[in-house]
Image (cartoon, rainbow, N blue to C red; front, top):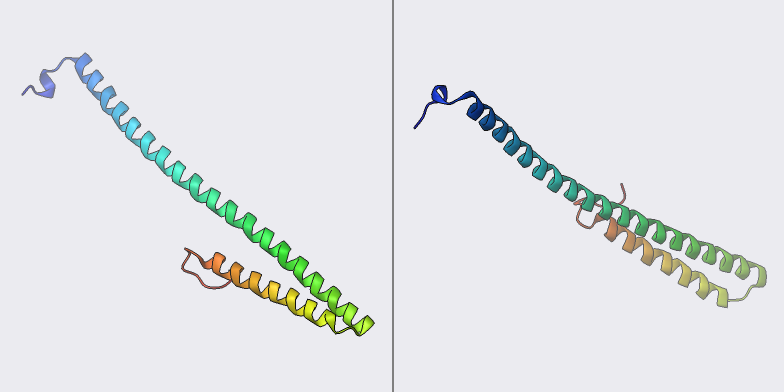
Length: 113
């Protein structure tokens, strides 16, 4: 096998540039795969945030409906509004349970954070 000392300068330079190019390609591939995984995780977080906001808005609507039915009950003394309040509060409880289970799914954490 030939020693590095016996090689011509052009072969040494080509070998050095080749090695640097190979290392550059390796770093580029690792960077691209890392960026792809970061992007996919970021998209999951964005989707989860949008879902949480939508569920929060639905809970707000349900609470407002419960409050309106409660006011109607006190104003009209009609017992049918009690069922509407119970239904709206049940919807809020259901959404809250869904929100907690979605929030902790895959994170190993419990409850809100």
